[in-house]
Structure formats: structure tokens, C-alpha cells
Amino acid sequence: MLKFLFAAALTISAVPCRTEAMKPPEVSEEQISPRADNIVWFYKTINGKLYRRPYNKSQNKWIGNWEPVP
Image 1 (tube, one colour):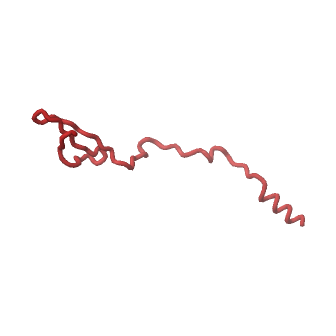
Image 2: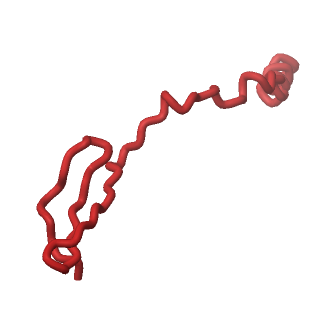
């Protein structure tokens, strides 16, 4: 019976831990990369009408063609 109580006391007792081990790691901005594409719109006027075209800044390429702004 004494062995059982001793084993139970060991499993129930709190285990101390250091707070340094619980801190998240330091991450620099160079290590962070966005998962979603960064899309921006470019605008220009053609024959007095406003047009727009999306550009993917993450991949550095145009998306689609110039379209009239609704």
C-alpha cells in the first residue's frame, strides 16, 4: 500500500519548468513569407475611359488584360 501511495504522489506532483523554455523562438522578418499572393490594381485612361489591370506582386507578373472600370 505504501508503494502505491508513493507512486501516486510522484505522478500527481507538479514538475517545475523553466520559463525560458516556454518562450516562442525569435523570428526575423526575412524568415516570414506570405502564403497569399499580393495583388494590386493598376489604372490608366484610354480614350477618356478608365481601365484597370491586376498585377501579382508576389510573382511579379500581370494577371488578365486591361478592363473597363465598372
